[in-house]
Image (cartoon, rainbow, N blue to C red; front, side):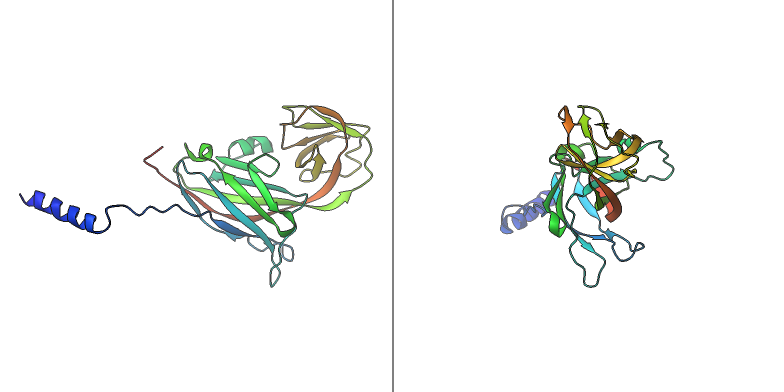
Length: 245
């Protein structure tokens, strides 16, 4: 029968080709981010990141400035955050926590195994995307970006100590004066070994941060930094449907 002859023909060609399928394990992507230092209007680096639903991968980021030629940017004591989300047009949120909750994927440099700084003086870090991040990922038009907040001034000789409690985003001071220090949303506090983004200054002794997974402690020393935030890289975030999940 003609159909059977066609099947044998294609089977013969397949066997002659090597009796197998050449599979490709994709290498991790690399992103060259731009932290504008000379011009506040320069656009961040744009790059599409494509993956299959259920994939896990890491992409490496090298941060440079906008000089000619560019130089690596020191990101020591910085806060780095990555987010991927659907089109945000029309969204309005009363606070950053609600906005963060709307992200499909959110990674932070101060959370273990999310963003790993590999060379802080040369602006290099890895963003780690896990299978749990992508296994139920929507097949929708999305975008991603990376935001870096760098310290511009160390506010020295600050009084008092602070305490933290597991599950609370509040850093509570004893003998502190955060308002006189001039702290604002977007500044950085260093406590319990972490550099954290301040999301609100509630009064002279309480600040709110984007973190709550503390080890309960009181009488902690701390450091304060004025922060400067830039979006350094962005682009389309494309998830492709996968038959095997």
